Length: 251
Image (cartoon, rainbow, N blue to C red; front, top):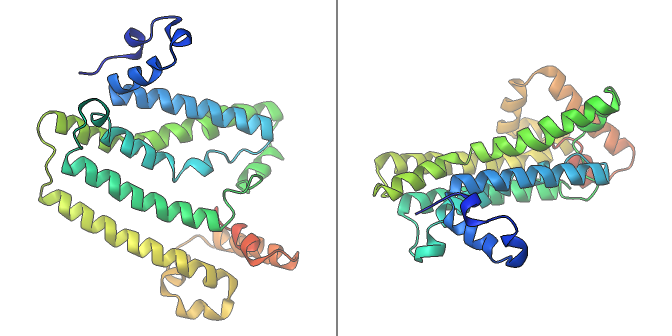
């Protein structure tokens, strides 16, 4: 049985017994606790951005938070019943973890987790927006909207949790099809990740990399040109290949 935080954490109770926070977490509806976590992450991202002048903290969470939320829903009942989640919910969490590992690794090797690593678009906007307007943009879009969006696209796991609570947690044919398609796209994305490096850094290899050749043909020319200009500037300034490659990671 789940309930809300207000009934589990009376005013002043948390200061007297911090362990009540965990009790409230495992007893509350996972959707409600997920909303609180999202708001806390939004506040943390905003505070860090103001304190450090780096507005890309939410970018560092994009591949981590969905995995955390998937397991948040999958393990919600385990903490109280010690019963493992149903096959559908467990499969969703595992698949999401594979996706997160791929994206985290790819982002890390481009320097995305460097302390001063920042999306190239934010300095561009700061230079063209009034300071006050940019701070409003930071609160509403960068800090809040993006974290809410991340939470929203993990809600199918909550739907699976509700279905499991109603006795419908077993895998069906459509689930196997979805898992197969997921792995197919994951393999394609992983291959594309590996091909992106030589495609942008070794021009002579472009004709041999089918995925990126087709991808850039379908991309607006201004995006392709912008990526190549940033890469060229980074290389001409003497940057290492990793730093040069990281200059295009947001494209």
